[in-house]
Length: 75
Image (tube, rainbow, N blue to C red):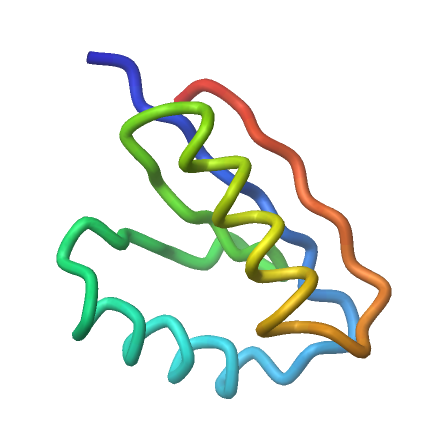
């Protein structure tokens, strides 16, 4: 089964705060997978729809105040 990744450029964000936020989400949702690649946060999802929704939630809710975008790609 193909997986999808949501890539968020964390320019201007405190990476450690984002890491802690991701850890807390992971505690509540065992399907939530993430890693950092340089200044990028990469979220792994089981389908494209979920990858897109996670991107929206992150940039509009969790990281609001930063002018961030995201990209969804097949892994």
